[in-house]
Length: 269
Image (cartoon, rainbow, N blue to C red):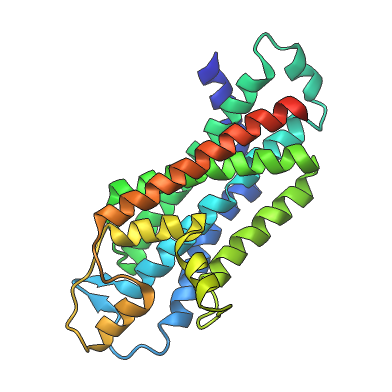
C-alpha cells in the first residue's frame, strides 16, 4: 500500500511538464550559461586538468546543490493540491493516516530530486567533462539536502498555508545562500565574519564543500590552473571535513524533522 502511494505521487510529478522542465532541463541550461560566462577570461586550456573541466565541475556541483534546496517545491505542490484543494476530504477518509500520505509524498519528492540531479551529473559529464569527485559523497549530500528541503518546505507550509509565499521564501533563501557565499556574484562581501559563515556553514555551502573536500585536482603551484583551482575551492582533499559537513547536515535534517512533527501537532494542516 505504501509503495502504491509513493508511485502515485511520482506519477503526478512525472505528468507535470513544468516540473520536468524546471528540474530536468533548466539546471543544465543554467550550468552551460554560467560556464560560458566564467570561462570567457580563461586563457587556452588553463581550465582543463587531467582531462576534466575544473570551472564546469565547480559550476555544475553548485547548481546541483542549489536545485536540491529548491526541490521542496515538489512537496509544496503536493500539499497545496491535497491539503488546501479538493483532495483533502479523500485523504481524511482514506484507510491510512494522513501522515502516511505526507511521508509517501516526501519520499516521492526526494526520489524525483535525486533522479533529476543524477541526470544533470551524467549529461554534464559528457558535455563539459565534469569531474564527479567522490560519487558516494555526492549522492549522500544530494539525499540529505533533498530530504532537508522537503522538511523545510513542509514546515513553512504549515505556518503560511500558501504555496506562493512558501515557494518565494525558499527561492530567496536559496539564492541568498549562494550570493552571500560568493558563488553567484564574485567578490561579494558582507565582512569577514559574515562571509566565513556563509562560505562554510549554510546548508548550501556545507553540502558543496563536502563534495569539494571529497575529491581534488593536482596543479603546479603558481600556474594559472592552480589559481583557478584556489579561487573555486578545488585544491585540498579532506575526507574528514567532508564527513563533518555531512554530519552537520544530518543534524539539521533531524532538527527540521522534529520541528515539523511538533509544529504539526500544534498547528495541524
